[in-house]
Each structure stands twice: as structure tokens, then as C-alpha cells.
Length: 409
Image (cartoon, rainbow, N blue to C red; front, side, top):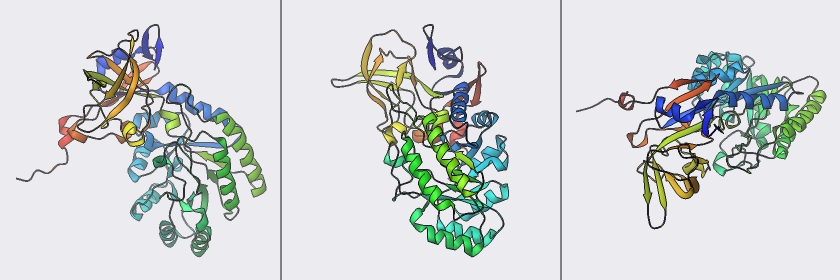
């Protein structure tokens, strides 16, 4: 979303006109922004045999998945239903990486039946996988490197107290199980969390992966996960993907030359691809001055965007309806019967009841974490592609709210 000739636009379309047509609250996505993010990664890793696997949990709308597939990406999924969505969006099974955590083994079997890549993150599942498939179906191993990195402890997944991955200190048990059943390990994987800006974190991960990779002679790829940081406000430090591509690519080439053959370098960007492409558009229900705070109450809340409450995440908020009004300090809150502050003490152009506010960087973990808390309905989703707005998910109705319930007298 950009300010052009006095109006906020996406690919030349006035955001206010989109709101009039589809209503609010509304998730609005810019497909061109997603394409640009994908291309930046391809350019950054141009000297590597790069495979981009979009981390679908960030945003699973099928039209978004189809668009990402059209840009030549694969996909990383974390549940069997995400795998089904990927296939429905047109991904071939061989383009799908399935990385579940703490699931029933039946989900692993279902993934094998689909023909997708399997990524195992605990010794119990590795043992069961070996018992069932032995030297047959290949799998990848997700390692926990005991590295604390990321913008918030809740989204740091590679430290010693994280549930994710098999600890690198358990390599003897991994190798014992692999040799016991002759399991074909075709990949190694590490993902340490989200919002990592330092190239050195990835180089540290690479040292760990390269150190254990020589024990697995049949590798096809090494997967470095993602966690690339994007800017949520002006001046934010972000991941320099070009510096990362240069240094990690060089280290990777040095490794596979000594390994004896060329391997694929995989990454799994989620937020990096879709965060900045998404905006949550909301209508101001009430402006509520109090002796201490001026509240702006909108027709959305933590039921639609939980990140500010769950992670203390910052999302820039702008007044789309009144770009020239004098700035005042507001706290923007939702209509949920719960504390659901979307932004505290923000300088925003004067807000009037009925004004449309835009909550930026809402493409990742916005709709995908939305709920019907307070029995409120989930919003519609619209994607702008090639200069045209497309409704890609209808707004919930009351029938959606009660579907599946069995009423007992």
C-alpha cells in the first residue's frame, strides 16, 4: 500500500474504493509485493542451487499459495491439512516439505501416502519411521542447534528449551536409529526462529549442519529454515538477504565440494514473503476520549490480528481516510471483550468515527491465526493481482459460526 497522488493505493487501486466494495474489516494483499520478495531471494542466492519452500503457516489462502507456486517456489507445511491445501493449490508432492511437531504418527503415514518430503523432529518418530519404512521412503531430520535467536522468545525455536527438533547433542541416538533400520536420510534441517537479522546466526547454524552432514552420505539438500526479519516501522533493522546469500552461499559451496557432490540449498521464508504484502483495513466505530487516554475503537481486534497481544508485536497504523489531518496520540483498540490493544500511544492523523484505518504488515500470521472469539466473524480476504482486486475468501456468516454444532435439547 502506497500513498500516490494523495490517496492510498495498491497497484493503482484506491484502498477506500476497495473497502466500499468489500466492506471492513478486510485483509488486503498485494501479489506484486510477494513476487518482489521472492525475486529478491532468488537474486541474493543466485550463485547457489536455491530451492525456496514457502512456510505456509504464515498465510494459507489457496489463491496466495497458487500465486507463490507460479513464481517457482515449493512449500513447507506443518500439518496434514496444510499439505492437502498445498496439493489443492497445485503444488506437486515433490515440492512439499512436511515438518510437523508432536503429531500422531498417522499424520506421518498420511504424508508418505501423499508422496511429500518428510521432516522428522523427534527420536520417537524417527524410530517409528524406521520400523515402518526402513530403507524405503527417505526422510529429513530437523535438528535443534541450541541457538537462541529471534525477535521474541515465543518465536525462537532453536534454543535448548524449545520443543522443536532433535538436539544436536543426541546425534549418537540419531545415528544409532538410522543405522539400525537403514533409514535413507535425504536432508538435514534447522530453523531457529523468526525475525533474525544477523547473518552470523545463519553461519553458526551452517557450521553445526556441516559438522554432522558427513555422517549422512545420501543427502540431497540442506535446509536452513528462515526467520528473515522485515521492517515493521521506519528504521527497523532487517535481514540483509544479499549479504546472507553471499556469505552462506560461499560457505555452502565450500562444504559440498568437500562432501563430494553438489547439494541443494533450501530456505523456508514465510513472513518475509507475505508480511509486507498484507494490510488489515478496519473501520473506526468510536473515538473515546478519557482523562488519561484517547481511544480509537475499531471493528476488529485480537480475533483478527493476535500478534500485538501475543508477541507484543508492533504494527504501524495509519488513517487512510484523513491523510492531511493534524496528528494526535491515540490508543487503537478492538471490539473484543478482552484487552485487545492493537497499538498504544500512536501518533495518527486525526481520527473521526467512520474513518478507515490501515494496520500494516498484516500478511503473516494475521488471518492464519484469526478466530471467532466472542462469536465474531472472520473478515474477507482480497488479493490485488495484475491491477485487479479479487475476492479470495468470503467474509464469514452466522451459518459458518454454527456449522458443525449439534444442538441437544
